[in-house]
Length: 244
Image 1 (cartoon, rainbow, N blue to C red):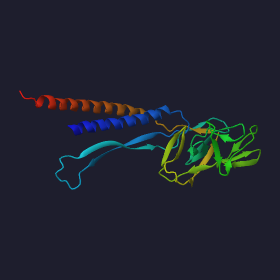
Image 2: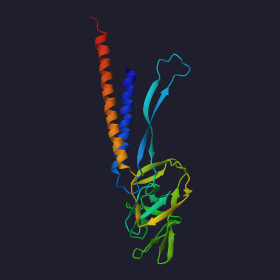
Image 3: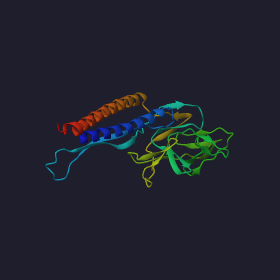
Image 4: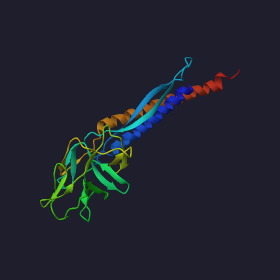
């Protein structure tokens, strides 16, 4: 009976964590370059070693790992010369106050010094440092990230990639960094940039809504099961053992 209460409560905790992931996905439907996340929940049995008389296994339900879906989002045309879409794998490399980070959000602009920056002012990195351009001249960016102005190359945007499967952590503002500090950057196996386009979020609205409803109903079922077992335990303690 105690085992049943424990199992139901553990299931409720996992469902709450799953609901948090779904809610975060739905809140970022319109966030450029956002990658939806999910939760692996595993059930396993833990047996006492060399104890063949163990009456039952300790069944636990717990959150195993939060995963990120890195599939490519849809392309949206903006006609802004500093809006960039990465077709294929890879990330833009940016310098933030917390160090080098990576993003798929190519919504860039120029700061007063003519440096290419993100919406929060972080500098976008090129293969040889920051890229500086003239603010009042047209900018052309090639499929491989070469920034050309007035027929002159100003630098090449640094598109970084990492070994698969990706092991990244979110840093906010659509930015990520490797989970392991020493994870090496590698050259993207294939990408091309589209100037004047942005990448939409890859959140599947219908799938996430279904998951939210399912998690809510399962939470209610676990809650009812917990209450039922709690009432049964109360009767066992206060009534069954009572002497007449």
